[in-house]
Length: 112
Image (tube, rainbow, N blue to C red):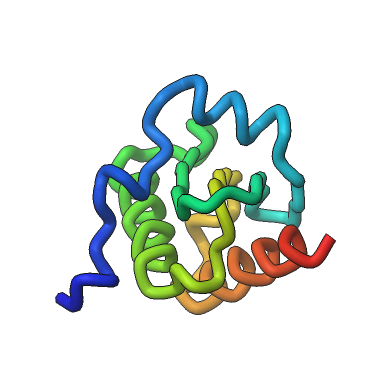
């Protein structure tokens, strides 16, 4: 795996205060299955939140793995600190549909 496709601890939002900062100060974009909050920052970090209304831990974990993979392979599209929230219905989407939806929301949050 190339070095730039790793998902290190420094690229994760891990602390409650980091999440609160992005939730309170971030730009919010939403579609049917996802909400993206983003704050401009020199660091590229991502936090992933999966709704508990998506039943089954296996399904939730699979969705988290897919979202982390999208971040790893498209770091240049992310700006600053970003939180991606997945809602029920997201688990039924294919990988490419998830990728298109998330990257579209991120590009919208960059432009405005």
